[in-house]
Image (cartoon, protein in one colour):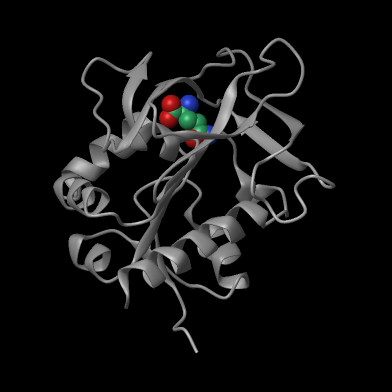
Length: 210
Ligand code: GLN
């Protein structure tokens, strides 16, 4: 029997508890990560939504920036939602002047892309590789969300906005072991994005032969 995937949730800021809960429901061993020793103890990580400028400051204050960059470079599976997507992006538009990211994902992400006045909205998406994805679109909740403005050649687009003024905008991507969504699947009650990530973690482990 394969061991239970041990997945951390970066717990400096944002909606940590919801991700821990959903991952636990999917059979993962989910645990908050606040320090380098806790990061060393997990095989994969979720970076939750929140506020990327604050998260960036805390990542640096808690001496996690370099360890996170090293693990990402070494192929650790990471799923970033909303502010987490911004943290994974190599380039950001509309960043704070001193804002840094962890990087790893060859994309340009625009912060607060749907307009600052648009606090939150929901929409149905067709999301590649989701279980039952063709028959059942995913209800996506966007909260002051970014979108992906440019993608590098190794990046796969998993979902785009399907109607309204932002139609066609890229809101979910994957590059190797990195997965990112503009929206918050942890609040919708539909766990298929987390399920996709847990599968990715299991595949990464199978490939590494552990
Ligand atoms: N607007 C936030 C940022 O720039 C992201 C919002 C979210 O994570 N819900 O970090």
